[in-house]
Image (cartoon, rainbow, N blue to C red; front, top):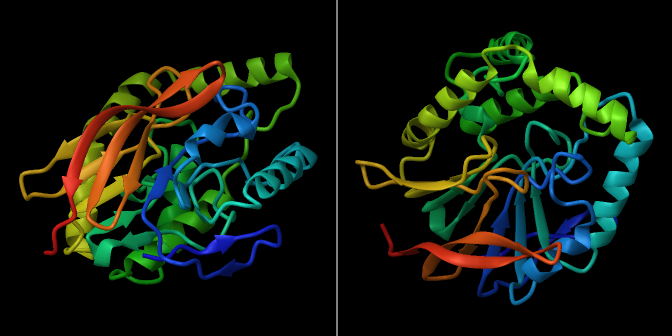
Length: 285
């Protein structure tokens, strides 16, 4: 398995196949609600692995009221990743961070994508859900039988048109005010979150069945609810959660013959691999 290398210039090039690739998602670096306030906090998670995949919502890149802050986030991320073979997969908060919307590994037995693709309104619990639904419907109107790549591209264009809200606000009090306004309203937010959590495993498995029937492991993030779900058809849905409170996150390590899921622990403001959650053999289909 080979990963692209993302250097300081942002160009991608081949990397020699290696033993372990680590998958993380939803860093939300730069957002005060996230736990990653300096990227070196993540350095212990890079030890002992030869490739890294960041599966969406790494930073906030949508156009917003603080473009200078967005620019600084991009520069910090590029500097931090300068020496690490890394693939950046897009999410709904960073729809233009790269041109890569999905990754297939282990001969197609593993499928990675951020996860918002399973919801027609991208973030069904947010106040932007009605607008997102309209934007996605407009983008999908090009054809009824779109490929997974086309659907993901449509979602990314729609996400780029959604307003950035509190995510890159650098002033603490203004951030808190906007955060409360954006997250408390509408009042039905919590039931919508719980519904999205309940539906995510089945929606994700259905996506794989429709577009990647050979995929046995589907790795997503997006909903910030970490977990491993074994589906009746034998598929395994893995959600890596996030680096935000209160639920935390998981990491996934992919080696040539097995896949490991671990908790991410936080000690002394650093993030490290934690307890084993699950382990699977990557036997050929």
